[in-house]
Image 1 (cartoon, helix red, strand yellow):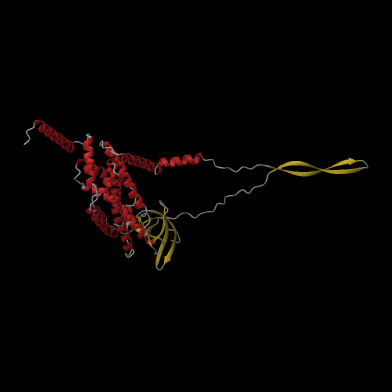
Image 2: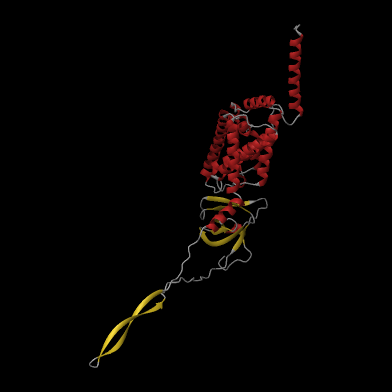
Length: 402
């Protein structure tokens, strides 16, 4: 027992401060004390380092995704996201600017890339196996390599929820946030790997580009959200990284939206375009003049007289060639539960892509291979060309040769 009243008062004051910090962390949304924020960031950094479980469950997620791709079952894709580990390195990248440690940033990014490599290899394996399957279907896979607003909103909610829970309770991990992040980051990487070996267009490198865009957005929105929580960078590296992220986000915004298109149009309009002009050319012709001379003789002299003539130039003329009337049809399936059909690169050739039922296509020609009539089509919306069974097309008014 301590008999010194001064020491007892000091201990009591320290205890009250610690208890006050715990109450603010439990009930409050922000951490006003600089000491609280520094202590919290130190605790967060330790909790967001990838462990062995992260890599083990990343491998498990990749294996389940192979089954999901080959079965084309949406439920298996959800199962893959459920079995994915909590993406602590991704959440750590959201905290990288405020923690301000280059080592922590590189470590978080490296851990995520290793997990992404596992998913990419899983996609590669699924692509090789798909070559052995008769008439495979990959409708669901293509959804994971395309940007959609619902996916973007799900990703944003996931990272905000993960950061909020990490700030409030660093020892807790949200399953909802984990599934959202894995679904939007891991699955596009696996889709890109499949596109490289499976021969399906629109997956590689689009899946990797989508995952990279989502990752940059997560770091950006995480930095903004932490600033709202009044948790700011503590080091020069943190401010430097924040500037890079904000500048990169602005560049992506300008380059990939209508702002960039408007700027390019203005630059093109400001560039002068050379125009061809026709200038007359003066040519001289000689005229003879007879002058009387002594002895009744005449002398002839030639005097040049300018005449303005235009040098003829070749003027191209446009020849109008009549084109046949376009012949259109729609993708059709007699099975009600079928949502898409396969198109191929050539008659009875390699798989190219899935087309949704009712897609409008232009019919370019037909070819009979064996007893099957194949139709050469062009998708009206995208311009994609391929071949399809004639029985999978529905036309309003068939042509005589149809």
